Length: 347
Ligand SMILES: [Fe+2]
Image (cartoon, rainbow, N blue to C red; front, top):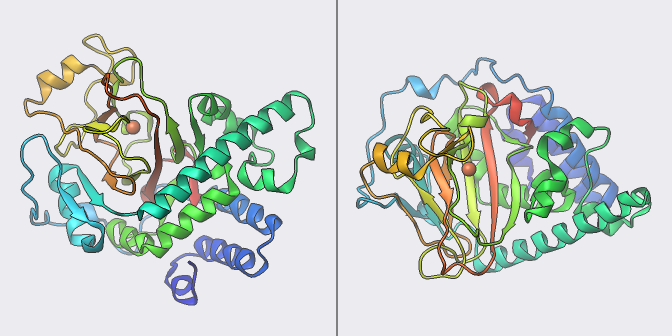
């Protein structure tokens, strides 16, 4: 929740303007203010300069942090959400390339977001049908707060492939004024803004393209390994927060995620050894390059994992996985080192 204290902590003018829009919505509770807040986050994000110097210094010049974890081979460092702090996050990212956070969302919150995702995907379907018939402008307000494209931004939506995402059981978080606000409010309540400010030494922003609500059906074939940095501008500082909203991974019926359990600091050459795409990495390359077993964690609904744009990962596939998996993926960048090609958005 935005309070005068969090308002004061926001270190730049754009973030303060977003906070004022959020405060206007908090006071009025009106749908129009909610949509103005979402649109304001996008509009103000266009003013972000992805390579401005930060007054707080470059964290990459620091001496390496102490390694606070000793995960077994084929596993990732883990921490309970109540113990999550800058030292553990920075240590895990530096030495292991990822950090699992147990119980970041309560089971009740995870369930609420599952329902939200169902509602947004239904609203997307209604919107696409209405648009095909030329009556999308007349949809009711309750529908528009669940799903509404960004005004006058055809190019933006083409870049995201909005319709394609919807067909594959995913929708851009920012396309939902209501759920994007709920999610960022939840992150605020959990103290993530402060944590990311200290981690990045900068105000965090998020990616319009890469922040996605997912209801993924099990894959009929093995997924492609990839590093998200293969699609992003170079020289960036990122953290992805992937929150499982269903129990998933080994011992469940829903696919989790496979991750190479080590820190990488460059892009593994994609598109070789039978990789299906020019951005993906084949199973053969992963097995040959990294001798340790890959991590296939089990996640309970509400567990989360942080990783960055160099992390090599793939959606799990196995015959046991027969049920869809709900998850929310949010890519954060330091404002001064963000991927402009992923469309930064003000938090
Ligand atoms: Fe990815």
